[in-house]
Amino acid sequence: MRTRPLASAGAIAAALAAGGHAADAWTLEEAAEPYAGTTVDVVFLLRPGYEAAEQMIPEFTERTGIEINITKLPYENALGEQVRDFVAGGDLDIALIDLVWIGNFAENEWIVPIEEFTSNPELADPDLDIDDFFPLVLNAFGGWNGTVYGLPFDNYSGLLFYNSCMLEEAGFDGPPETWQAVMDEYGPALTGDGQYAYALQSKRNETQSADSFARFLWPFGGSFLDENFRSNLMSEESQTGLKFRQDLMQFMPEGIVSYDHAETVNALAQGDVAFITEWSAFYATLTNPETSQIVDCLGIAPEPMGPAGRKPALGGFSLAVASQADADEQAAAWLFIQWITSKANAEEYLRKGGVPARQSVYEIDGIAEEYDFVPALVESWQDGVPEFRPRFAEWPEITEIVQEWGTKMMLGEVTTEEGAREIGTRMEDVLDQAGYYDGDKPLAQ
Image 1 (tube, rainbow, N blue to C red):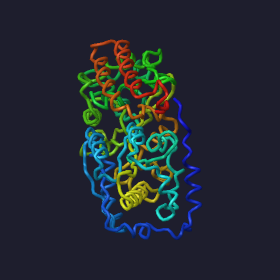
Image 2: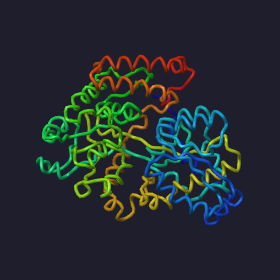
Image 3: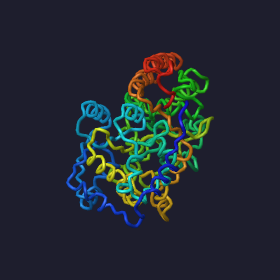
Image 4: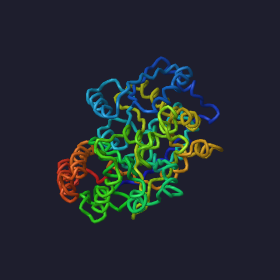
């Protein structure tokens, strides 16, 4: 992978320092005054982090006079709806960007680098503090090839959620530290009598690619691509991880290839499985007595380590200003993005069910004790893999290939070698047509 280092923090800090306004002179109300009455259009997903933001938006509107018009979509529809809007020069003023979409959005110039706003003292909150975002998260979700376009919003890490009561009954005093321990010790001891050790969400959609297939590449030293953007799926490390996934299925419920997030979380919540590896965003579901029977038994830890270390799944979004918006809409959109992701709002966002990417909120006294997913989350965000799924523009096409052949592997219709070879061939065809091999595009992911 060849990418320019993310050089945003110093440049942004310098731009803010160079602004003509003293820190105590800037207020949101004064900054928004020219844009009162402006309506900002944005897509939100049907997830807890967006519900949290919706509860906070009336305060923003009251203070600024800027209306936020939300279109709610399931994840599966969010990319297509936004792409159609941007291609047509439509109404969206803010882009909601999954980390694997940012290359597509940036290369098509649908989004505006944040420097355009942070260098404007009329719009830049002196308390933005870009360095307060976890560097890994800012890079992965908001950055592309050395430029920051969006601020992290609704961000996740893969965590190990487990039923401590089931583990104790089986003789374990804690969760598994390694994947090998899952295979050799926890799997056999916790599977039987209609219960299973582990559920791995593997449905044939982005869940198969991100939550199942990729999860067993990185901890075993594998990856989708090598440094020359050729398939790395036939490497010994990648094959070890994919074969491990196949062998681990003996400790999973039947029909695991049809499990999406809801089924996996519910399997743990109802006591049918001992542990799952799921996004941090599902903490609220698993701690709610109305949706979970294991509230008093719920434990949380980082994902298990493989031979290459702990390489947890990385997922989530950023919010970026759309280039198709007019000048007033862009300014209003930036003020909202800056406000909803701010240090000042991070604790409220967390308490309402969101997962902020601000380091400072997790340092508040008592937060780690009150929200016991925090220590595992913070550890996961220290050393993750931004390209857990390649973030270039071609990922939406490649993920469909991974979904098809990854599912065939799990069903036993092809071997891991046959499936990996097929994915690799088709993936390289996509990258070749895109111009990566003849030098038309940089090897950035």
